[in-house]
Length: 214
Image 1 (cartoon, rainbow, N blue to C red):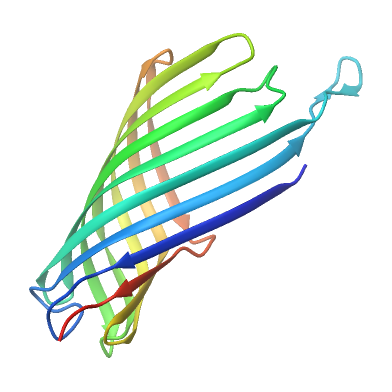
Image 2: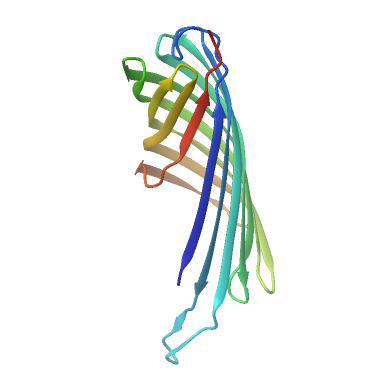
C-alpha cells in the first residue's frame, strides 16, 4: 500500500493601519486556502480462504477556505473571528465493499490571542477559542447509499509561532492545540460523542501576512 499526499496551504492575511503589527487598535483581515490530495492502492487479506481481495484504488481530494478578522483590543492582545468552508471527496475503485463519500463542513470560530514577542519580531501567540461546525456527509456503495449530518461544538487552547521579518511581512505556523469537541449526529446515523485531543505540529502549515500601514 502506498500513499501520496500533496498539501498546499496559502494564506494572505492582514490589512493594518498603525505603527506596530500588534498595537492596540490595529485590525487584521485575511483568508487562508487549503488543498490536499492523496492516492492509495490496497488489498485485504481473507483469512478464511488464505487469499487477498482485488486491488482497490482510492483517491481523496479536499479543499478549504477560511476568511478571518481580528482586532487588537490591547497591545499584543487580539480578538479574532472567522468563518470557513471545507469539502472532502473520496472515491474507491472498485467500490463493491468500499464507499465513495462527500463531506461538507461549515464552521465558525472566535478566539482571544495573547502575543509574546521578542523585540516585536518573533515569538508565540496563544489563547482560548470556541468553535461551531456543521458537517454534512453522504456515502454511496455499489448497492445502496446513506447520509447524515452532525453539529459539533468545541473549544480549546491553541498556540502558534509568529515572526515579523519586516515591517510589512508576517509569518505564522501552528505549534500545538488542546481541544474538546461534542458532536451530535442526525439522519441515517444517530448518536453523540465527546472527544478530547492534544496535538502538536506534524506538518508545516505556514501563514504569510502582508501588513499594510505606516
